[in-house]
Structure formats: structure tokens, C-alpha cells
Length: 122
Image (cartoon, rainbow, N blue to C red; front, top):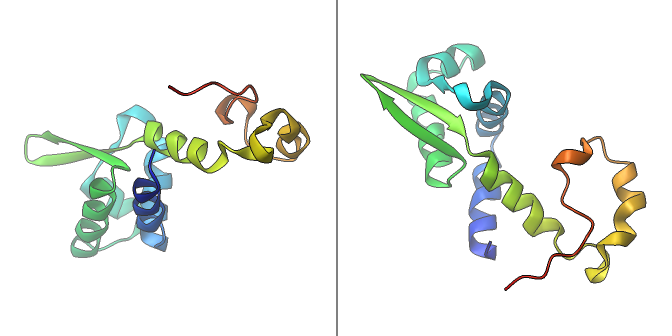
């Protein structure tokens, strides 16, 4: 991931409604939700919702699939994991094994945290 893409992704989440939308769709998993369901769940008016969904899709955080006259939105978890990896790839000055103590204080399940072993990049 390049810095510009990370900035775009993080910038798109710098809004309460967008963060709420993303987190809601993460909870839904692969099923996702149609726009009306998102608006109803969060109490966001359709015009505002459309604006926020467009920004999240543009940043790549959401995917959208047409289902007849509805649009189904899903969280792009792969992209979020890429962002987390980008932010933490140089943990402990390139010695990520030193991060074990820091990781122990995290509330994240170990399965979603980046590996402690340094994987060479091509």
C-alpha cells in the first residue's frame, strides 16, 4: 500500500456517520446491507447516506453490487487489513518480534493482528 491510498482510506473514515456505516457493514459480514437498511439502522436520511456511501466506495472501503433496483453494500475487510498492515509494518524499528508485549495489551483477537514474523517483500 502506498501512503496516498492510506491517507484516502483513513480520511474517508474521519466522519462519524462514515465510521458508523463501515462498522455496521463489518458486523454484517459478507451479507452486507442495502442502502435503505443502512439508513434505517443508523437513522441517516437518504440524501446524507448517499453522500457518505459514495465517499466510502470511492475510497475502496465498501463494495457495491446492484440487486435489481437496490444497491447492496459490503465492507472491504481486505483493504482495512492492508491499512493496518501498512501502519504497523515497521513496528519496533523493523523487529516486530519486540512488539509481543504491546500486542498482549491489545483488545484485538490475535487472528486479526499482523504476523510477528517479518515477511520479506519483493
